[in-house]
Length: 117
Image (cartoon, rainbow, N blue to C red; front, side, top):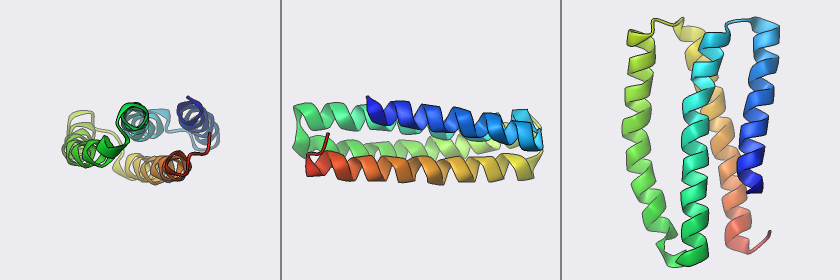
């Protein structure tokens, strides 16, 4: 599960470093946690599907995409309205982790499809 270890490790270390530099721990953590949990969940589902049924990966990814749209939309609204966090640090953190984690996932998908361990 090397990709999961990389995603979790990079996220935690960078979040701790950002909190040490900028403060705003609550906003930075909330901006990190949803993209991290969903990226890890997606990776586990894709990797298992690829191992047992490689032709089913596209269906898993498409289903995950629809689910992510709903989950991320609801999450952002709940955090911004319900938890009353400062919007700029939260949105900046969320965006950086969203893009960064999906970049890591894309690179590992390329390796997975190429058969590289």
